[in-house]
Length: 180
Image 1 (cartoon, helix red, strand yellow):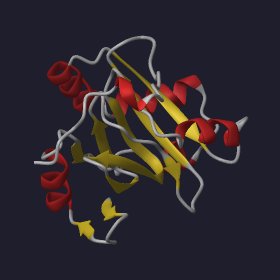
Image 2: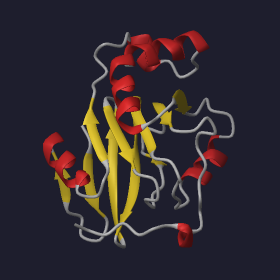
Image 3: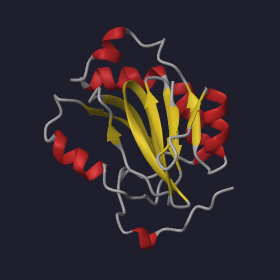
Image 4: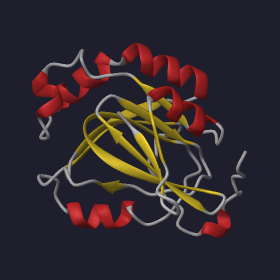
């Protein structure tokens, strides 16, 4: 289950409802979809064929279609980061630089775990996610991504544009997100 840790104070927020309520104040969606419906091989395999990727996406078709209808997303894919990933360190260097997007960052964690540090009015809040967690970081929100000590994560990504993931590293191109 996810948790939130405030970097400045060490304060921790746990529990699905508490996390959902806190993040929703800042426009961040958190849901728990679970992974019980997936066969173990689809959860554990990190070298996926196109057919296996499609099977994972199909397993969440109902939730994905609802999300796409609600928020205007049009496409999805699978991203896999592990020690088997070519150029893993180069990718992680790119992901762990503070940035934002003109599109929401949508991730449903199929397996593994990671950390989404999010900047909220100057405060850095680490959102720890694991298998079964969905997080939607709104467009314009400063954030980054880090692998945790497990060093692997497999996610369904969802986008509003076919271009997919495009980071904007210049903070001055962002509209600030106030605390509520």
